[in-house]
Length: 394
Image (cartoon, rainbow, N blue to C red):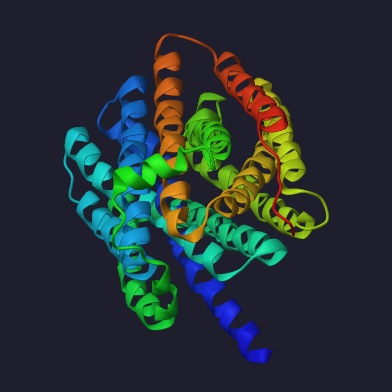
């Protein structure tokens, strides 16, 4: 029994740490955006392009790497994604203009987008029922730790050494690929299906057996990623727009990020006590209310409370959806199922940051922009309530 527990904890730690590095990359971009905006004299619309292009790369990474994980096995694909986005960060430090910056971020996004569905699929292959749900949420909780570490780097390192040195630090993430190679056992490779092609796999997940689940999950991933990337990539910039100095906005973002961890841990604790569908409804509703509070707040205490609630509920919703998705697909199509639904979500992740930049550039106020997120979240809640059942036994 002790060996089983050790093996499970090791797998959770290895995959969770990879998730952590993924989050560090995404979080650092949110802190870099206002800096390069000032350095390169970018308009809000151009800053929106910078944030959106990473998500564009993630669209291809999610679907492509999900399929490759089904065909060739999870382990090597996951290692490759980690190396890809780590090397991308090294190259990013040497970019001299916004166009080169966006090109590098696109390829970095392919690795970032590929890592998440492959990691979720690997964990889902290894556990079932309530344990599977809790493991997936706990692994996703490492995302919050990554965001917190990125906040610390941005608050302590970036003001002294600049954004280029800060992203070079994240290049050393690629060394972790060698740890993963040693500690991810090859037994997970028995999930590969070499005779399947991507068109057959996509057709299968849109068949009668999976049609309803795929339809609803694509909408839910779109809503969750649209709201998360739209609001959080712009979080430091929004704080600055609320007349909070840049260095203070980085510190406040760190404080608000701390609320992500209890959001994850409560979701993990609730798994098996109430249905995953009901947990997701609660977290999406909490995200909606938090977006309204944060978007309309003017006083600093209300801004911080709204931001902390947003971190708590939005990341808890993400973790719950991670736990909700893989169990709707059998192992041979799980990589494509998770990857495809997340790739549609990445369209939302691309549109969210871009729309904020475009709307702010058109002169819309921050409260009006955040009402867009409130409306999208309301649609997601309705689709979840009436579109799908959580039929998997815990």
